[in-house]
Amino acid sequence: MPAIDLNELWKSIRHRAQSIIQQEPSLSLLLESTVLHQSDFAASLTHRLARKLENHAASIDVLHQVFTTAFENDPTILQAVAADMIAVKDRDPACPDTLTPLLYFKGFQALSCYRVAHYLWQNNRTQLAFYLQSLIAETFAVDIHPAAKIGSGILLDHATGFVAGETSVIQDDVSILHAVTLGGTGKERGDRHPKIQSGVLLGAGAKILGNVTIGEGAKVGAGSVVLKDVPAHCSVAGVPAQIVGRAAERSPALKMCHRLDS
Image 1 (cartoon, rainbow, N blue to C red):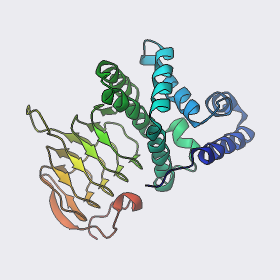
Image 2: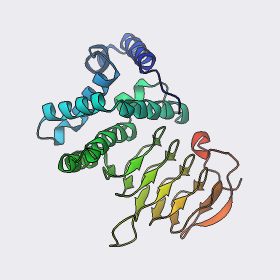
Image 3: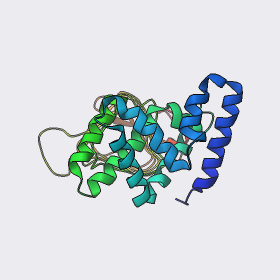
Image 4: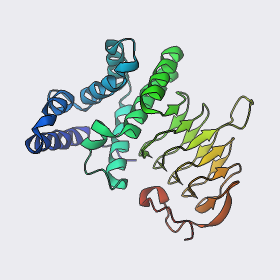
């Protein structure tokens, strides 16, 4: 995936914030503190996420430092966040611009917070990673284990009830609706959670259980329970899920069409 110009993205976010203040002055405090008074994209993201979590946290100063350090030490986090932001804008018709998910969309916010928790996990700060995971769950109703591996360009739409277990893997350019579970099937340890390949679309309430693979460009229908591998570019639905057709699109995640009969 080509690098995103964060400076240009930041300019567009600032421009949008200024135009909203002209239309709706009552939001000036929110937009000034979150965007216009911040130095760059990383500072804005840190400010917004820390304040979303602060009601459940012991110290907002600690959160602010954790986010700032992660963004400074691992620039790939901001690239992934920017790709997620653009994915939301491009795929969600309710999203008019890149500023909106930063301000209001909890799926984007939860995923951004997870990325910092994952950074902590990778750097052997597991207790702080678990703490951040718990804050994310309490604040956004999204529970992603910090060891899970999630690519970029992810749309986590609505997000309430999304769960991803410890050994889950989600590749780039995946779209996920609310109440999706990437879970295990019992008490086994080791590699026990689903692997979601690029371009996959997971419908609302889908449950993918066990160390199964959802192949590239597949669709999983809303409310389905998937217990075995799904071939690439196939559509599955039902309890348990069965193949019902082939996806007409090469990358259903980008098109966001939930029809399963084509």
